[in-house]
Image (cartoon, rainbow, N blue to C red; front, top):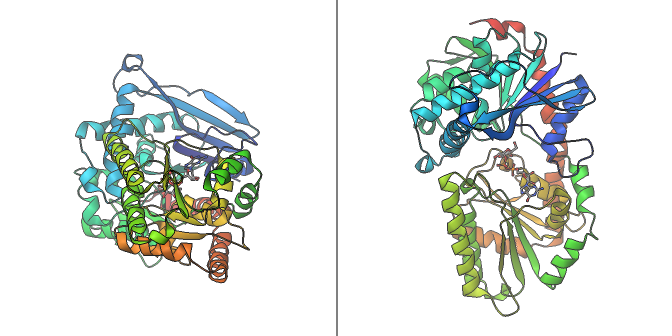
Length: 472
Ligand code: GDG
């Protein structure tokens, strides 16, 4: 079987048996072990600009940082300038907000786009030294839209696929990026592009048709910018049984502490990176409205929001953090009693093995992003529940997960009153209805497992006729 080469912005710091690693990283590692392979990405380290002269494409092999059986991890450093332009600038200051429909938060500097291209080429140069002609290359996410173009410039004809973890927006939104055409031309150098939902895939095909004179053939092949490429929908999944097993470890000391603090009150819980796309501001407002409209629930409910800081050197992230700190204080100031804190807002991360029992202890999982490619927390929350007495998932209709988990209570995160009502409904839901909704979600999640996501994408990539890869 052809060797698999995985490329992502960061290489997951994973060792066999490491319990804190996310399911996604573990799933990808399994695939690598199966066929042998390597995983390449940024080390997370930056070096002073002077170490690498501008535009030098650091020659030679990057250092191998870890080996585990037939799998080798390789990483490369970024210069401070690369980090600023590529990671902080174009990837997280332009692409992330725009692809999440937050055009008002997007910045654009051509210099940063040039940096994005430079780092994609830098990755390509390193990779080209590592891959052999039979390898299939699987790149991940919005950081690497230009990687295939970099590899093609170096003459590689391997099959190269990209899975986009985040949404692909409507053409009218994407075209707000001044260099959208250059970006999409480069993206079309991939042979296979995977999306989380059909809506994302459709938006990409629409862009090519409307903006690039592209066309879609009856077999689903897209043609644009002189290239033929495939697209597909691969909703990412979770390992339901592993999550439930982790969640059922109910005697963990942190749970005892939580239960003592709750004193029998119902727990509403949310977990996410502190990111403006996750809808925290709107959710806080909806909870405040719920408290204002439902005095019966005072002292009987607590909302635990875990939000580890993320990308804290990007301005928009500093702003949302400041705002939420103010809001959390204000809501507690308005409703708290001597023996009741209605909102607990924790800006820290928890080890994975602690997080799952917390999900299981929560009567309501409140997952209300403004936009999300998939949203794994929604699936993890549902997987963690005890099937006999499950909690209720309140889920944004704008998360990719809503396409599959339509047995959740679906809400519009912009509808404050609607979210407050859904919270009331969730807290009061009878056990029969909770079981029914949970069983329906479990069925879908077992089918669209993490393994299936990975095997379908890699399988489709491997099966591409070499014609698709080489014709223009
Ligand atoms: C992107 C897309 C898509 C969170 N806090 C802690 C913690 N987490 C873990 C969760 C979950 C993961 O991080 C977050 O995944 P999400 O899918 O919810 O969101 P993004 O980070 O934005 O991921 C998204 C995903 O890629 C995969 O394709 O679903 O749409 O935006 O696994 O549990 N883990 C630990 N402590 C925390 O405090 N250990």
